[in-house]
Image (cartoon, rainbow, N blue to C red; front, side, top):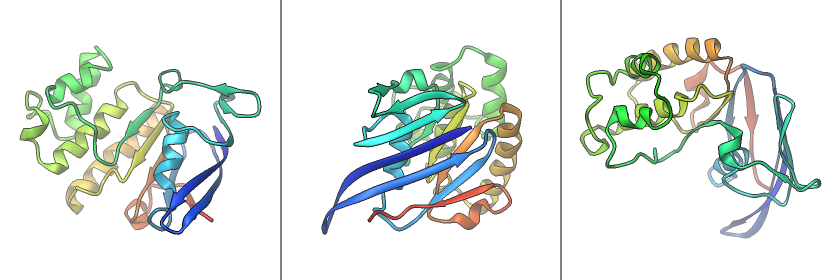
Length: 207
């Protein structure tokens, strides 16, 4: 289970706005976050991941406190052991597809399973520059899953995929998330793409 309550001040074109988000989601749920551009959706994911600080907040995952500003608790990203799919992939240019996954695990069977799920099993020796945008995006998703995270954060993870590939991949991911009992939080500009997948919605709008 994840319980988060955060408040952060953001800068916008019109000055300073406040991001206030409350989220409570059961283990294994799939939460979709949507809202207007610049509302702070990606910022919220980065706060959950420990990649960004916040003025006030508390985050607990599976009864373990990750953040509590009032108590001075701030768990590092590494200790949170979560998966993060960045909007712009953040791949390593000098690593092959397989090396991206081997960087996080030496479980060859698991790596091969992920490559098959992502349709990248025939491209395992290619570096990112020789992959299409959609293939790079799928690699970013697979890399985030290598540690079998309890919490998976995804920022616009399907934007570069055509409808057929997206539908097929989501079907595979839905099964995998259930097997891993992973709680998934997805920022998407298109909530309809997760119909039948998402169990909960959260609308974010900075004030």
